[in-house]
Amino acid sequence: MGSRPWVADALAEHWDVPPNSRPRPLRSDGTAPLSHTAALWRVAHRGRDHVFKVQLDREAARPPAFHHVKGRVLRACRDAGVPVPVPVPTTTGAAVAEHDGHVCELVPLAPGGASGRPAPDQADAVIATGLRLRRVLDGLPRRVVDDLVPLPVPPLVAEEDWRAALDDGVDRLLPLAGARDDAWGGIARTALEGLERARPLLTGSSPDVATPPPGRRRVVHADLHHHHFLLDGAEEPHVVAVLDFDNMTVGDRLLDLAWIADTAARVRGGDAARARAAGRFERAALREGLLAPEELGLLMPLLVVHAVPVIVDIAKDILERDLLSPAWTGYLDLLDTRRRLALHRLLDPTAPASQGTDLPRTEDDR
Image (cartoon, rainbow, N blue to C red; front, side):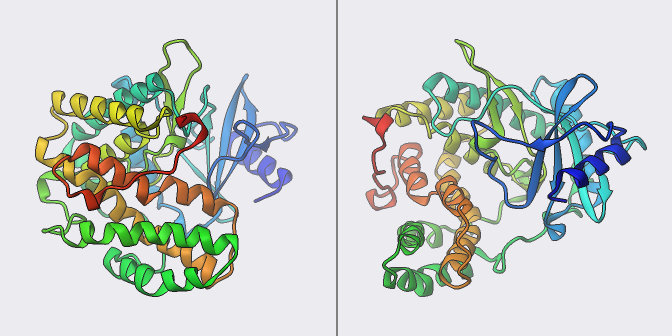
């Protein structure tokens, strides 16, 4: 499934794409999109470019029923004005195809690009579109929720319990990282030190921040990071596509709101710009009734809790399994606990100072 002939065969068999279409690996600004569970190819089909997605990890594939529910959600989003690419049906009318045991999907290629350090007006566009998406998901019929409940996201880490993963990461893995004097040891150590600093906040919450009350259980995108918001290059930018609903599940609706805040707060311009972006998110979410004031202090703890098992599993790959993938640095930046603790202080000024942290400055912060 990693070769051009394999991809061409799958496209020809399931979408009637001519076998001479010459698909090529998808690149964004010269680099591959951040994914280690899927391969993405660019292919011309019926006069426009599309993205062909191959699920590499069979254990991560969602069952056929999930793709039916996903299609209903995507159409509801599109009808409400949220820009989402809807998959091209196969020749049999299905949303996805299985080729040699791998789930494949073909979607129109959206214009624009993602920004890991958005300008303030780009951050505003992310906030506006993200909140619109959350309104749509909140308004989905109950039957959509009921149909999605028995289709959970497959586990992708060895230890799913965040408390067990946190204790293992801080108490056992952090000393291992500190004993290494190479760059990878430093990468793991920085990530685990962030968890160490967050532990009092996470373990001191009662009830468990990862267990939402029934009133907050809704359909959630669950992965609204900056790679999944494509922005145009207009003078007044807007989001042209929200991508990748493959981790969609039924869970805490605050998780999506936490991701939106975190993504907008990656804004360039230093501490002042981050504070302004956080303030704009807060005012918009409260004004639209998507957040209650007392929920602001839950957002970053919830987002960190969901990241803990992934961060610890990556640390195990580095420190124990000697799997030194270049993708790990991108994932750890995406899940950076230090950044989220700093944002927590902005969203919840009543939090103790020990629950915040200063971020290292980058070039565009100066």
